[in-house]
Image 1: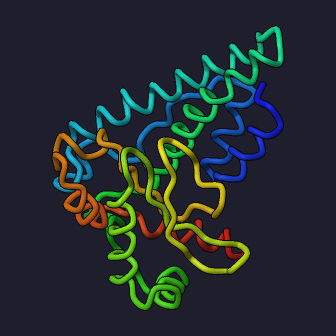
Image 2: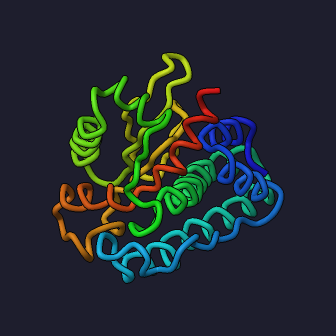
Length: 223
């Protein structure tokens, strides 16, 4: 069982399918969600090798770690032991949440990938950033500047009613905003293809961002 504080923090960071997926893991073991496309479907922008390793190895590791940490937590004999497990639950639980969102955040370029049509999300991006291209530029600059490993986010600020760029370290989920678009900036997400040139990866990934999914998240968040 997760502590009340950890449950609340993790639950706040997810919406719709991601929320329901993780909610089930609170009462049963977490499982690796299938990709909604083939491993080679995002080429040439993200290689089949990266997608296979990223999904089957890295995400699976977070799933395994979360299940192990939750089991240890439920069997802990003292509050001290439970507190000691909070870091593992946060890291692996965040990794599971972030990647479950990330896979749905992508789509093949010959389908929905990279296509932002006229609609509420485009209107809001132009309102908050001046233009879609200016948003991408600011997002890439902010995300490329992350030191070490982390995530770049476009999030909806419920207080200001604006879309804002944010970042989180390691596998911390985004809890300050409703996540609309998340980009993994860990080296395992791009190094085999783009080496240490983060800007090339960030420029390429817009060709496979699923803006239709992002708009659905935005519409739900801004109700």
